[in-house]
Length: 86
Image (cartoon, rainbow, N blue to C red):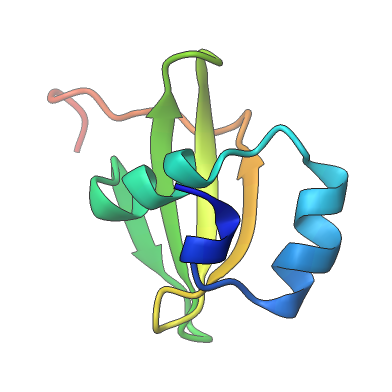
């Protein structure tokens, strides 16, 4: 999969990919399909988190309401909840 097969905002194409050329389209599409965590913001944007095994890091994806990719970055502060946490 490549970036031409994913709907993205102008901001994502012009700013995010320029600043973070290491991002892979497959990572983003996989996280949106099988997120570890998902939060809908008040403005309608949706935050998704997923674990990227090859980087040993959590990636946060931000989309518009229609799942158009708007931002993506490694989230150093994300911690996956254990089954014991409420």
